[in-house]
Length: 137
Image (cartoon, rainbow, N blue to C red):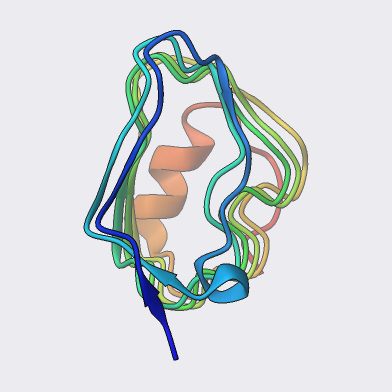
């Protein structure tokens, strides 16, 4: 049985948020208020309920595995503040088809978007235009 947590609110001065695995902790929540100072996000991994993700502006680093194995994720918006996306950040997201990217270069590790088979040509180009040279399969 899933527990219900209505809202997560982080204090405004928090700079790093640990990863949250909804499946692992059996939580279902309606929203999160992200801290204004957030710089490093460890994400939601192994989640099967989130379909759209807008990463908060201010985040500079998306850590390894942050959004891996998100089975229902279809759309991600990455803000202008992101400078680094680490290895396997979006690994095994079988439904991911749309990624809204900033216009500037980003530092990537080589398998940041590995095994995202539904990323079409336009989405792959948008990601590659920011400096990604790794595989999508």
